[in-house]
Length: 95
Image (cartoon, rainbow, N blue to C red):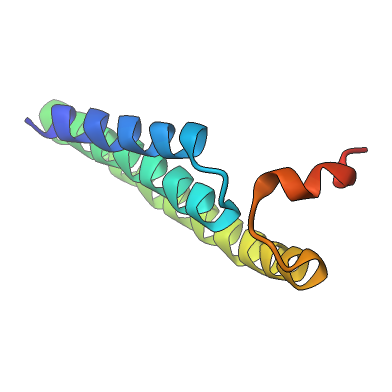
C-alpha cells in the first residue's frame, strides 16, 4: 500500500514537472517526487528491518533543504528581473 502511494506521489510530481511551466510549481513538484522516493525508502527499510533506508532519508532531507534554500532565492531574483514565473521567459540564461 505504501509503495503504491509513493509511486503515485512520484508520478504526480513528474507530471507536474512535465506539464506545468511555472518555476515555483515545478520546484514544488520536484519536492513531491523526492517525498515519494523517501516514502519508498522508508517502506523498504521497514520491511527489511534495516536502518540504512532511514539514514538515507535523513541525508536526502538535508540535501532537499539545501536545494530549497538555494533555489527559492534564485527564483525570486529572476522574478524580480523579468516579472514573470514562466520558465520559457528565461531562455536567454542558457550558456
